Length: 348
Ligand code: MG
Image 1 (spheres, rainbow, N blue to C red):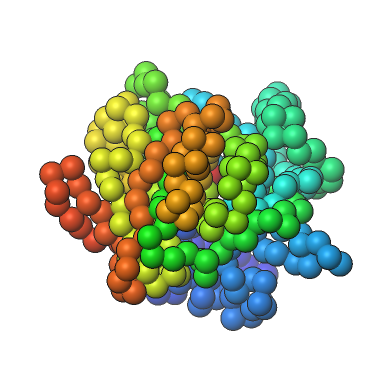
Image 2 (image 1 turned 30 degrees about the horizontal axis):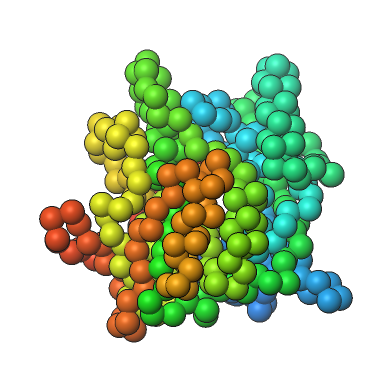
């Protein structure tokens, strides 16, 4: 059997998978709707949340899985191992679940230095301890030299959904407030600088962190006044707020000057010609709360180490137009669109 080679010249957006299909934006949505979801559709999957929810007796379990293909494997502030643990822990946590355990899959390329495997394993162990979530099963495969890019990881997290967590797009109402636990874009820019400009010394560091502690202290403080949460990973803050508008059918307003951005990250984005709003985060959660709970939510976040720079960044408007609007420092207004393809390939 011959193996078909895919040269860039012979691939097209209409008929082939492109790097941009992995960006978590409109093209990822299109690919899944066209090629994957019709075949495997079911009510739990169709909700398209960060984790799928299944009933187990009187309990609800959340399950989430993610693949990690970041390049380089090590970057300022983190590495592929930390990403793999935190990413899945965060995905079940934003669905209101306490993560219980993780499964880890490793695909290694022949010729990879064993010292790299050990270093990543140590990092996985450290992140797992930090999150308080053990890795209880796993799988290892090796492919031939040139058939992978060093190492790919997959993690799956399982969690128990809290009884008092009532989260979903359907609970979002006009007047609700939007918050974030800190500055955006650090992860995407740290990886891009490490890859594109390895000789440039920068203080931009990935924000990769397990958010289960912060999320559950927020739910402890506010219960069902928290109505929606999502971690702002690929596609950044833009992907979350535009999806919020699309899925709720509501007008979403983001107050741009209120969005925390570290000056060095802003500078790096300008240098690379990237939009910080679309840059990935690995330790940021967007939270929607009832208006009378906004101040308490801000305090609860700020009292946690991973929420010291938390901010109130927007609200849900009255109009049922599914539009996301950004208000600027000088009083301007612009419509925010869902990221289309891949601004930053292979950042997680
Ligand atoms: Mg997520």
